[in-house]
Length: 375
Image (cartoon, rainbow, N blue to C red):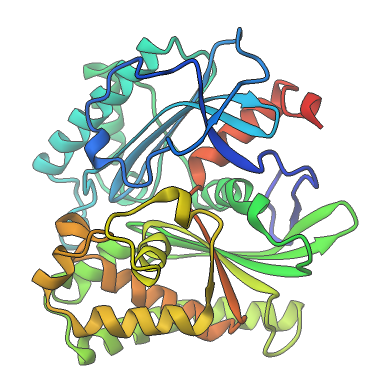
């Protein structure tokens, strides 16, 4: 799928209906960091359609998180061998000084070392390891990538925003409703937010338009008082900032689809939308099996946002779906979501606990002809 200035087509084949855990991996391999693995893959087991091939690996190093997914193709999608996620805040302070800080790089190196061990342990063959907004923007981003290669032996590539949008669309597209004619996919990251208008075409969904907003949960919270004690006035300022960034995309959609265009539904893939879903569902602790693929009413998202805005920072840390690591970021994410859902007021929002890593795996497996043989 090549993303150009107008649109690109996505395969009409939905590469996975569900994401399952490989039954051959009953506790095998290093598990360091699983306590940080929000939304860990482990609720259902699946058997790979190709148990004898080396597993594939996908790593997504963002502004806030370091995530790894190791999987083989399965009859209905991906048989997950192992998964890892850790909040590293690589982009901490980047908006102020333009550099990746030493403490942030040290945290990230530690997480990447865990990822490297997992790739070795599971004898991963084909892999793609990407870095996004923090490394794109930082003056020392390329130097950090070189340091990772030197110290750990992992060869990461810094991808551009077009590629990030393409991968996000590939990973989330299977959750677009079967009866939808259009959908907005959005991915709220740590340093940027990708928003994509998907339109049904003769051979699947087409990416009619996309944008990448220079605002994510880390950068927006740092811009507005750090995100800990967010007053209604500060939250309104966050929303106003995002609204200005989003306006050119709204105008572009209006010119291509029609004024006041409303998609069939929204589809969110990010820690923000999964957190909001968990809070709305009243989960004591985050549970991926209850969140991935669930639906929120548009108004539900607004109600949860109001609920979180009324909480103190300490109260947010005590919520099992937020925790201390996200308590100062969640309202920045809510501000971004608020402007997206108000700009495109579809009645429902589908929640995806999947994204770039799944998109990477799908593309690699399809390139090798493995996904195609499962149709």
